[in-house]
Image (cartoon, rainbow, N blue to C red; front, top):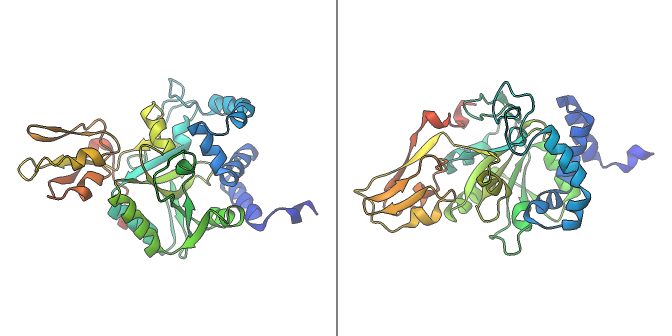
Length: 308
């Protein structure tokens, strides 16, 4: 009788987690993350303060298991770590708009683990897609947690049947099925607004890629965490490069850069390579085509969808 009270999508999601090898606590974590994403992420933005206090012991235990701040025993991406850092379990890969668009157009079965050069973390590196993988457009939990969010808010693209079905059944008012063309239109529109496409991976989300989030530094919890030392985001594998001869010093690249990596000097745009994530937002927004992306092996390898 009890099993009949559990929604079919929950049973499928739970079974997929068990098949993936998730522990009981990890499956509970996955359920909480997918069932209450607006509370889960909203607490990062200071909402639900009473809930944050009540869940304090849970957060303490999570930090004990997967430290938010990397340290000697939990260095992010270190294969010899004794504990996986929080960023190892939950992270995003910056992607130029063209590659992000390709990722939602993959209409064939894919099962591949990204090498560490592409996604430099110890956990959650798989890309698993079916021939007709479901695509869901979800109201962004990060933007929903802000008092004056960037708009539109329905910009999170969830990819995958198990999580997609779960969200459709549990968040019917906040998500809907879209096709690949509609997903690409969202990615391109967000890019025009100066927002960054990230492919997100999470260990309890079946250890795989599960979403393309279109992120802005004012709303995105991952970008805020990254700025405060939780290395949740990795470079696209490219760096921005400026042509001072073509530049007209309009400053648009400075305004569009979500990582504050571009400053304007008398000699033209200056790129801080330590901050640049190679997202290409400055490139697509430059009216004079004075900005380009170049391969940067020292930043890691790109996620090249054509090679999957």
